[in-house]
Length: 269
Image (cartoon, rainbow, N blue to C red; front, side, top):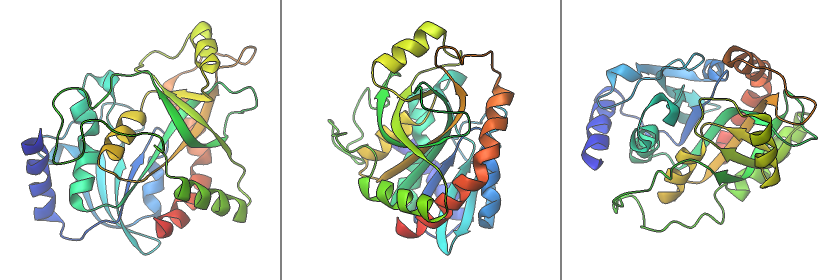
């Protein structure tokens, strides 16, 4: 696996020589945030050796380099999911690659289903913790060059970055929620019974991504800030049939507010 990552890194370093400070992963419907970046280079995923290709609508499949609010960043316009058939090594390869590029913090976003009765579609939820219901990406031989065999997750989401994000949101009059994110494999959306179960075990939102990337980031001691856009509701009386297009559209409506938060937060990373 290390050789695979190093081959990807070698290609990136051959086309881009600057060192990004922050890595950003953009979820469903949030790819337009890339327009906020003063872009130096766009690299299609398929051009990068060993990189998977995103197969999901709303994930543009570009690795973007440039400056955001004066800070060098690298952003994934789209991500990879376990439900696409990729191994967890492949799902999390970009996070390993970002670490080797030199990033010192990781920002992750997603669209998710709200299971908290106080949530509404369009809410922004800063993730404070997670419940992993997916295969752990650290199963198998440990990559000692990246981190220890056993990883402490008592602070999976960086408290300092979370505090800064709250202050930024308040300064711009942006309403936000905080909560726990449950990660499931998908690709099916949850049944009413599953929504009820997920709420009962302590989650506020549920989705099909993010946690594998966060676990791998913390394995490498990368601080993480993560945020969900509530794109549908999984609470009794509010469950309706949904499609991926509707999830993407709901997330896109909130993208400008999320862009403001991330643009200000990169300076603090």
